[in-house]
Image (cartoon, rainbow, N blue to C red; front, side):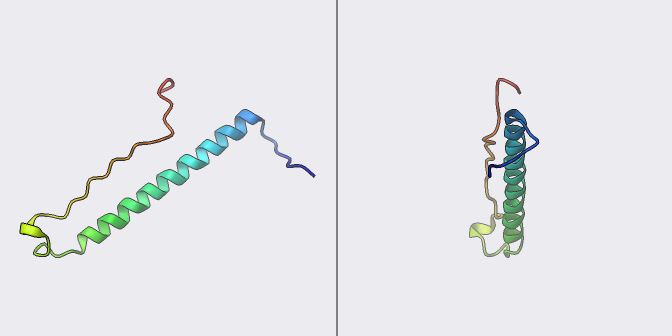
Length: 69
């Protein structure tokens, strides 16, 4: 027995992409939260030369379709 779906191919592709974007977005937010919590708990005297703890993070969103944006 095959897979039955009320969606056509285009709708299924849109739903798949939406799910992937949601998972990516939540994972990225979770990662940023964890990094922020980790950096917040460090003592300022611990870092070299009393510099604040900073991390640079670039989010290159892989789902952009530039022809449509």
